[in-house]
Length: 274
Ligand SMILES: C[S@@+](CC[C@H](N)C(=O)[O-])C[C@H]1O[C@@H](n2cnc3c(N)ncnc32)[C@H](O)[C@@H]1O
Image: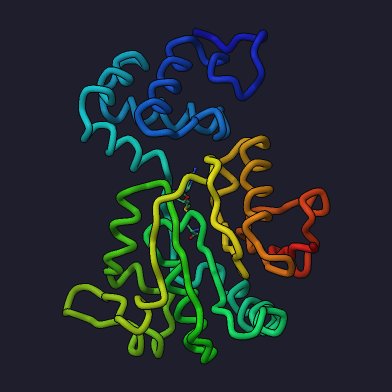
């Protein structure tokens, strides 16, 4: 079926009724609304997935994920694109360390732990990087929350076990201090783990945590439509305490930061104004 001119660009119906039915089925089974993700990108990814897995059409695909939990899990795993790295975009972590965190700790209420959230945490690399950074700055009174919609990513994050290739972004001295090596895997040690917890959370849902001093939401917004992005950014802002900071990814930008009550303080860093 060709794309219809009667529907908006991001309407699943513009890719035909079978695709729209498939999207509805995914929402029923997983709570994930595909129409909040960029349609063209999503449709192309799904067609590639179907080709690779010999699924002839969207109706068959919908039936498969409905009947077989393994098929559903495999598909969701593919869908959520969970690539991550420790200290991804090193130069931004330098800004975080030298400028943002010192400012934040000065403006934070005295006697209260610093609340940090890695939203779209994937396999936990970002949340653990944050915990290591705070430990290195002798700031032990910190609570790091890592959340993701993807169950498999959360299992990996909670385990905190990484291959040699996965820890390549960790500076040598931190690798020695904060990981136990068992001959094959690098396992995040207790000093770091005690600061971090992981929870399931859908950024496109309604419930958001509160009172965050710092939120990292990086390389997640790029997958959402403008409407999805608006929903996520306005909720992230209400999760921040006034004066709290939102950090986004290296390929992302908020052109309308003021409309959300944010002011840009450095490239990729935005402060909640009131
Ligand atoms: C590319 S990874 C980014 C990981 C990390 N933030 C980083 O920059 O290295 C994107 C993550 O967003 C998660 N994600 C996608 N849609 C989501 C949603 N609606 N709610 C929460 N997490 C979502 C994916 O499961 C994936 O782990």
